[in-house]
Structures are given as structure tokens and as C-alpha cells.
Image (cartoon, rainbow, N blue to C red; front, side, top):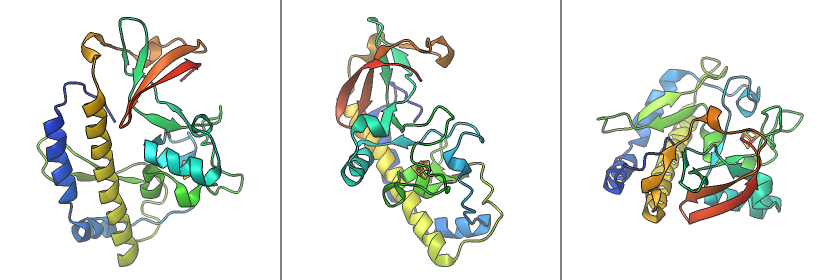
Length: 224
Ligand code: SF4
């Protein structure tokens, strides 16, 4: 999420109603025109194609915690902060799955399968597709990330409807998360934008993560 503190909540309620109006069968027809079949290459779980950060919401993290018997910090970490306040605390608005130093997702196994497959986050379930609201568009647009599965096969009608349903549920979930986050957010008037390259690597720092539950302070976070 590209967070914007001037984004009015009311606008998000409008986006929510538009997300809820997404027509699954029309979206499924669009998907069938794309020709896609997962090849199982696992590249989306590695960093070779660029940023492979998997953003996870609190309820997704909770599900992984319960099913995998893992602690919060064993699953995710604050995403790169976007703001810093006058006391020097960084502010982040998302959690992302932990990666190995190679950039590969912690949950990718040697045989290229996902160890949390049944409980994997929305982003993984819908890759390489996502819906995005472009300015002035009433219906969110279908977008596609880089993936060797595009053009490798074709959706059956059933799998296209299944993917379209997931995409609709995902964007509803994303907008709801942002609404709840904004409802809890305050004190940002003195924050300044931070650039990624201005964050000193390897230096432990505190980071305030804002999500649908409110503010969670992570002490001694050591790098992004
Ligand atoms: S959670 Fe599973 S599917 Fe998602 S990036 Fe990690 S290994 Fe891949």
C-alpha cells in the first residue's frame, strides 16, 4: 500500500463499495483472455524478478501463527518505513513475510513448494494478478505482475471464476484494512517522508507499525 495520510477515509468507503461491486463473471472472462497457468517455478517466492515482498494483514498472520505454531516475529517484520516523526521514530504501515538473506521467502521449501500453502496470504493466492484502483476508474483494473506462467496455459472457466472471486475478496480485504488503519491513525502532522536510501542499514531502531488494530511499537528492529 502506498500510504497517503491525506487520503480521506470517506474516499476509502467509496472504494470499498466499488470493490464490493466487482462483477466476478466479467473479471473471470478477462482472466480467461490472459492465458495463464502456474508452472510451479517458485520465482515469485524469490527475489530474481525484483521486489518479492509479501504484505500480510494481521488476520493472515494470526492464521499462520495458529496453524504453524509460530510467533508473530517468526512470520513477519515491519515493512520499510515511509515516515519519521520528530523524535526519530520510523512509521510503517504494513507487515511483510520474513525473507532469508538471499531474498527468498522463508516459507519456500527446497522442492519449490510452500510450507504454508493452505494458509498462504492473499498476494500469494492471487499471484500474478491483482486489482488496482486507477484515478477516476469506477471499477478496479486487472493488473498482472511479471510471471512465466502468463501465456503458458489457459484458465478453465472454473479456475478463472475461483481466481476472480479471490481477487475480489482480496481487494475488499485491502480496502477494509486501510479504513481501519486510518480510523486508528493520529499524530502524523509532524511526520516527514523518509527515503529508503536514507535509512542506515544495520542500525537497530524502533519502528511504529500502524495496522487495523492500531499502533504496535517494534523495538530494536535492525534492518530493512
Ligand atoms: S508464503 Fe509461500 S507462496 Fe507466498 S511467497 Fe512464501 S513460499 Fe511463496
